[in-house]
Image (cartoon, rainbow, N blue to C red; front, side, top):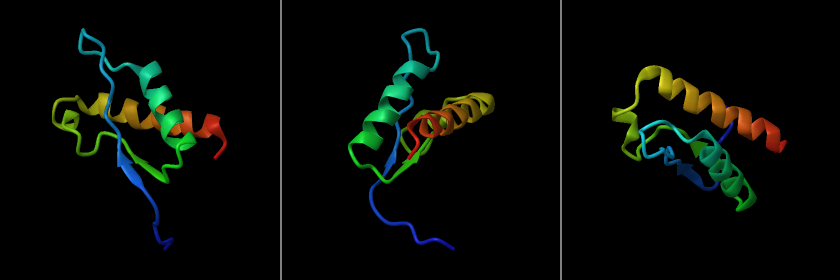
Amino acid sequence: MQELKGSFVALVTPMKSNGEIDFPALKELVEWHIESGTHGLVSVGTTGESSTLEIQEHLNVIKHTIDYLSLIHI
């Protein structure tokens, strides 16, 4: 098992005014954290939206976060 070290951040899920997930804003947030040296990201964790999103929305946020991370080539 790999030991986790560093700064891990519970990501806020950006939302549009109509309540939809703002995926372009999520991408910018992921990029900013990686460029700033954040070591790990926690999607739909403890920032409040986890209790208000549908299961498919949870999965979409996690999938998009992983996709954005793979584009960065960390």
